[in-house]
Image (cartoon, rainbow, N blue to C red; front, side, top):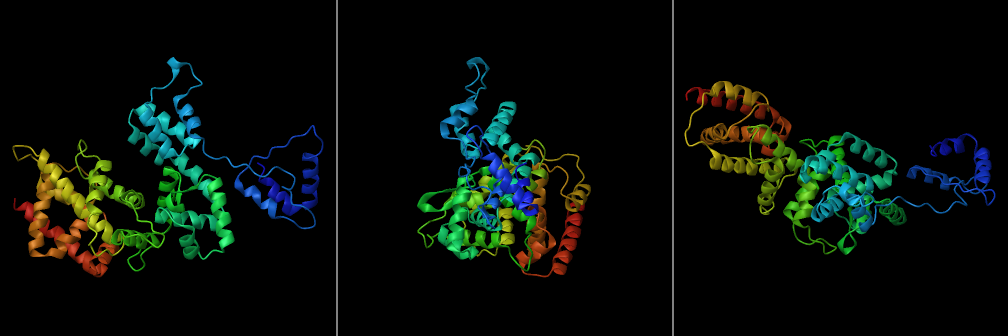
Length: 416
């Protein structure tokens, strides 16, 4: 644990100087220090003599593998031909792209793919792996506050120029340049088109955005920076000052996790053998969503609210295509509705989903806001504060509408 030398420097600088002389004394000695980036703090300890790291070869960062090295690793070319895993060139290139040639992630994704036979399933398993999240958290904590700020800003904007980073972070140009160079050397970022910086690793990008959402929840009074950036991207698809025009992929990268969570909530209310999976649902909803460039966006809650409307329509369309020729079933509407509106648990057949959709249309003819509250809460998964922010009313009003709408729906279904 070479980082312990930092503590030793604070306790007894003279002992650390003696240790450096011993490690660099004589041609028969070779010393290799392997540590986290934190050890670089010793380069700044000057006091009355050279810092501890003086005399060692400048640091070599463990960067991603080269393309051919990554391909060789995935093919397991060190094994006999008959012992190698069966992975097509197409899958190998997709894994390389998602992992950005990160040696540990390459092996982890490939192993999950060999086990499951489904690439998307393997990718989702790795993204949700607690051990992977822990490694990312440790790597992130090793960075300086300035470097963490740079990564957060790039993640939120999908890609950023040095000029926009300097403006948003109010960093000295030399500090920003040094931070960008080190983050690039460590494999966190890369230069994309037009010298804009982006996060290299698909899994780290997902982890960082998830961590940001957990640490900085959006309130109805103060929209988060993420909400404002989503609003900016979705309302203005024109070129920015640097001549960069956000692409659909960049927009999807920014909003994918939140939209995917919303799709997951949809599917949890569908029957377990539903043929439309959350990943397909979120992509279809997104493709419809980004066409609506004339919508007057109001931040995250409005974005998710429109997403909820789109996915409701997608599910209804899908249900119409798969409904049974004969209506019926022995389910109890009132019992079904009690459980349905009380919690997000439980299955929902295509026929039940269509019945609920028709009931909401009837309710909207009587009280449009009550129907909207149900849609936002049930289909969108928004809480009371988010619904209130979206509709521009008080939380008490939302609670009242929610209660009255539930009573109306119960009576509606009880009447058959």
